[in-house]
Image (cartoon, rainbow, N blue to C red):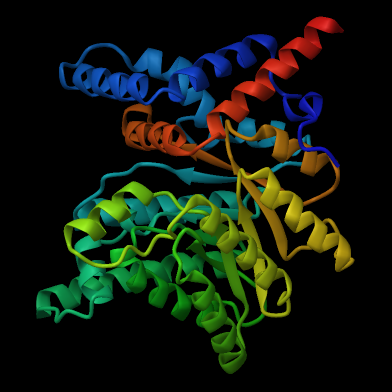
Length: 387
């Protein structure tokens, strides 16, 4: 199977949409242009200039599915017609107090209930820092003593996690917990572990995210396997490379500790591929959600599945990509009958701008990603012109 079949990969894109995507990825490929655009956008918003219509017509339409559930579900149905599933995420970021955490909790619950009301939605997702203070999580991760007030805040964090996971369990909707920075990920890992022990007794509902650019994550997966055997629960893992490499290395240097990040891109790739191999070798204990845009890693997983005579639509194996990116992977895998799912961020345009900025910055820093998108778009436009 070839993942560079652009006819399948861009089957839902018009020529105009492809040309617009080409322009956007061309801009994103330049760190200078990306930073310039970010600064202009932030300044325009501060000055209350009417720029949101430009954002909507460009990056918002490329990377977000809509402003609300109803608008987004139109995209869900289009993707489902091509055997590509979806999971919706209310992508409002930068929350920092108890009131906003509680409001975000309500949105996550709404997303679970909305997914449960639609027979073509199997997953949903939430970001821990949308419902929890990173400062409290950091203190717990570093085993620092909490004041009585902080203990109360931490208890509320655990309660929010439990409300989300319980609601997912009751509605039989799989819930993905996003990963965060390493200095407070440890507390998240512990909370999610307790949720998996509680709600993954019979099938896999709760999934944690493992960022494989961290050199300790293979050990983490091994530890999870041991704990799952001891406590009789199923492990859900969303396997990704990682999103905070520059921030992680900068903080490690500033505070004079060994960076948790692998020493090179090659080492990260090896770590990711070994993690996937380990999970696929232990499907009695694990379910794998492979969140990757790396074609070589995808081919490696397909080879393992083929050698192991695993069904393409094995319910324990999913492939996920971001909406607006790597459509060649998503649609070609779906065409072959694999379980494929797209991450669909949504929310009011102004409030998802932090997500869009982060997405642009991450794409700029990922070596080869935007150039691959540009190459595939050009290939498809040429193919269409010749037909």
